[in-house]
Amino acid sequence: MRPRCIRCIVGSDRDAGGDGVGDGDPGRGAGFGMEAEIGSLEVGKKADVIVVDLNRPHLQPIYNVVSQLVYAATGADVRDVIIDGRIVMQNRQLLTLDEEEILAEAKDWGKKIVG
Image (cartoon, rainbow, N blue to C red; front, top):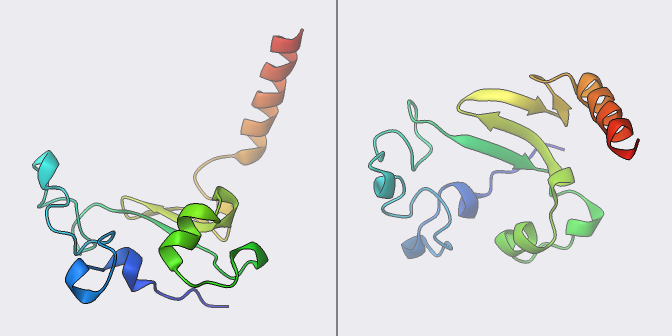
């Protein structure tokens, strides 16, 4: 199933009936003096984006997307991750890290800690 764009998350503003979470919220990035670089989803600006798979049994039915994301979604529901324009996870597969190597190292450290 194709992900659907959720305007209330990525492009809302309070005047449009949104919740003020998205890039229409005035002042985003301004607190850091970086409004030209961050604060909205625009070509040339830095952004980190996640795609959450809302088509999961524990996330249904959806009455309010923001509430569902805050109270019911978990990290396991994240399908894709883009950091500063670079896709680092796609379809739940890490593209920039060696997951098997990380797990093996974690197991080795676990053995060292336990003894």
